[in-house]
Amino acid sequence: MTTEPTAQGQDFIRRMINEHNRNGRFEGRVHTRFPPEPNGYLHIGHAKSICLNFGIAAEYGGLCNLRFDDTNPTKEETEYVASIQEDVRWLGFDWGDRKFYASDYFEALFDYAVALIRKGKAYVDSRSAEEIRGTRGTLTEPGTDSPYRERTAEENLDLFTRMRAGDFPDGSHVLRAKIDMASPNINLRDPVIYRILHAPHHRTGNSWCIYPMYDFAHCLCDSIERITHSICTLEFEDHRPLYDWFLEQLEAYHPQQIEFARLNLTYTVMSKRKLLKLVQEGVVDGWSDPRMPTISGLRRRGYTPESIRAFCERIGVAKRDSTVDIALLEHCLREDLNLRAARVMGVLDPLKVVIENYPEDRVEELEAVNNPEDPAAGTRLVPFSRELYIERDDFREEPPRKYFRLAPGREVRLRYGYFITCTDCVKDEKGEIREIRCTYDPQTRGGAAPDGRKVKGTIHWISARHAVPAEVRLYEHLFTAPDPEEAKEEGGFMDRLNSRSLTVLPSCLVEPSLAAAAKEGRYQFERQGYFCLDAQDSRPDRLVFNRTVTLRDSWAKMEKKA
Image (cartoon, rainbow, N blue to C red; front, side, top):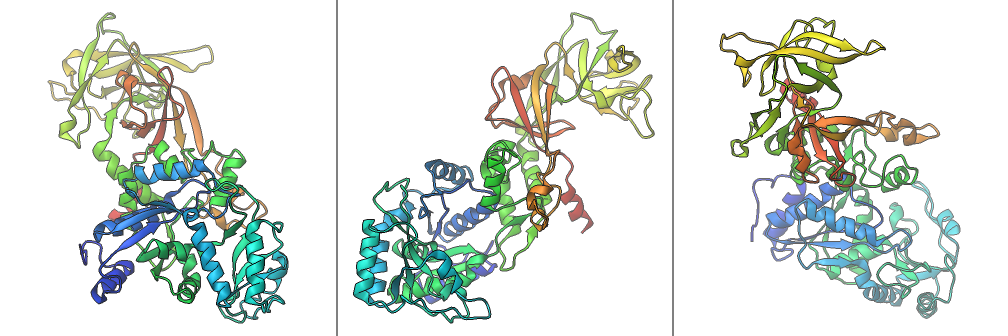
């Protein structure tokens, strides 16, 4: 068993684990857990927690459980359970045979609640939620004792048993811990630990009509599974005294709760409630929309698990909340895709080119490099013919200064092909350019001239005869503001939606090698960016590519300046 990993052993979580290993608190064991609620899809913030919990367990030769916190049946669905498992596996982690549910422990949790009642540490409160909330006090004022606080253990046991039996309607009673209504920590002011909820559960059906609250269930599930380090986000720091109180009162095995700062990302919202609002109001096309920060959305857009793990490792863990620039996430993606993505040619806004001195019936196959960063990727053959398509933006009838692409009388290099010179352009009845006429120099095959002359511009192209039609979707940030949640106006974050977050280009052309593109296959369209074949909407007769990220790397420029 690894005692003190050195590569990443300097953050506060690992320092605490190292200290526990030195003093023998958990007998050298390291056992973590990732405990998602199955009430939505996982997002990039959860990826940080997944990488941390599974990563630490691996570093120390320990174990990590996957445990679903399924204590609220009104918001949970098996769809979410399946998606969470898929996302964790896709990120590269495996829980082995250690998949658990809080619902696995409902009977044990009920018995723990009964034990608290018997100890005089819990009571049934028969007031409404509003009445209870109104007596909790404030940060500066103590709370007020419930008139039911001094019920006897026998009376509380009878009521709690009848709550379980279904004798009472929703909201008529709750079970509360009996701690201290004057505590400066509001979480210790007799928190509710069970509520009545007549709703079918996705695993237990109608077997239960009372369900434990998170603070009660979580620490005891950790204890039952003999977790050593319960790593959670910073908002639970004030809940740690309650975590400890339950375990101490019940004399149960006691893990260590450790809090770290959650991930906040610019131009993004992370709240499941807000993400659900985007889905329900049709702002996005479901949880896996490529504009969403969900792991399924990132995967559909073309992100790799390696890039997300690298991002999570790079941002590290901290005790103070901060916001990470989304440019860093994109930088990690570009670094990974640069090494693995095949280079191909795709024309997003086609403009026809006719090479007038090229034989009409001739087709050549030109050798193209698949990935200059990976010599093992080899080469491919790209067909070349008399009629081509180039980007409309690669031609200017009246070129501006420092424009080095195609223009009347100007010579450019076709990528992997020949030098061509524009001789004329054909316009339609509206005066818009419909076609470019050119000549080529047959001595420049491969992009070099025997006489040593140079050209400043190199452009990509597609053979018209061999072009494969495709739809391309270009994405920008979903929000116009770096912090969408700063919006205080009536519409809040919804008022900061970016109307240009999706642009659909229905008439693009790609090289023929992409006719056999694999779903979720990732490619660099030369000069255009990185793209991924859409796994949801693509069909053999209709290719759809999502632009994953552009080639421009603002984070790399920032690092250079630094």
